[in-house]
Structures are given as structure tokens and as C-alpha cells.
Length: 242
Image 1 (cartoon, rainbow, N blue to C red):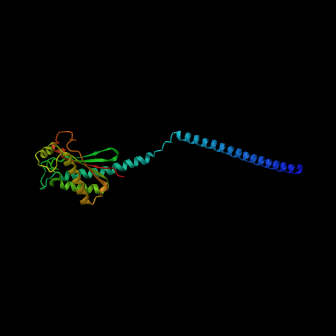
Image 2 (image 1 turned 90 degrees about the vertical axis):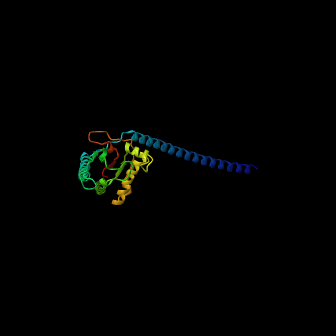
Image 3 (image 1 turned 120 degrees about the vertical axis):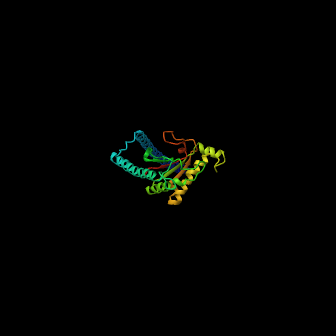
């Protein structure tokens, strides 16, 4: 009995020792993993702080190249000047005569105005451009409209055509002498008709043209020599070269 009890006790002690060793190894492994995770946490926190610090710093100023900017401005100005001069020359040539070829009694009112960012505007405010209440360009100005479209298409520039109306248009609408219910639709029809006419005649890409109508609500400033009919006008904004 004594020998068997001693043997059992020895086995139990061996298993206890083995269990203790295993638990010690597991504890050591836990310590190693915990230490490693702490180091990674600290490292990650440092990285985050570094990123925050970098983000808070002002971005370095982009160095502008004044030579390139001045060159682009000069090129845009040259392109504009050439096209503006050609348009004004054509206006003087075509709008000074009527449909019969005789000197026109109506004074042509065509302006070219520089806008921001290299755009410019061609204002065709000739008194005989449209009949009151109508959206079709009159025969007297058809040649100029054709020539203007040709010049613009050659330039490759994008366009925005803006239609306008006046008091006489309102009167024509009220007398039922117009196909349009108000000056909004009349002015939009004028710009849309011209846009579609140019697209058909010059195979102009529709992506490069847009139209808008402003009714009678953007009258021109009155000045000597400018008739009230000048408000029946088209304005073509020629957008800057890309």
C-alpha cells in the first residue's frame, strides 16, 4: 500500500510541475505579446500625431511663373483683338446698307465689349435686326449674321447667345401680332433660332453653343444716337480660348 501511494503521489507531482511550466510559458508568451502590442500602439499614436502635425502646416505656396502667365494673357489679347477687329469691320461693311444694297437709313449699333477672363461680347443692337414681336432675323442684317457666324466658327470658340426684347415687342404681343405669349419666350426664341441657324449653316458642334432669353428686362442704357429699338437685340458672348 505504501509503495502504490508513493507512486501515485509522484505522478501527481510530475503533472503539477508540468502544468505549472506550461502556465508559466503561456504567461511569458502573454507578456511578450502584450509588450509588442503596446509598442505598436505607441508607434501608431506617434504616426497619427505626425500626420496631424503635417496636415496643420500651411501648404507651400505654389510658385507662379509670371512669364507663362503674361505669355498666355498676351496670346489671348492678340486672339481677341484680331477677332474683334474683324467683327467690327464686317459690321461696318454689311450693316451700312439695306437689303436692296442702298445706304441704310438706320444707324447700325454693333459693339464689342471685353469681359472678364478673356471673354468678349458682341452686341448686335441694330434697329432693323428684328421686326417687333418676331424672332426671325431681318433680311437687312442676314449677311452680317452669316459673316459673324463664319468668323466665330473659324475661331473655334464656345458661344452663349442671349436674346432681348423691348416695349414694342410687348405691344405686338398684347395686340396678338406675335406668335409668342410674352417677351421671355420671344427673346428665348430669338437666341435659340440664331443658335440653330448657325449650327445648321456651319455644322457647329452643339456642345459649343448655348442660348438664353432675358425678355424686356435688361434694356440698354440710353445714349445719344441709340434708338429705343436697339433693345430688340442679340448679344453673343464669345468665350475665351481654351
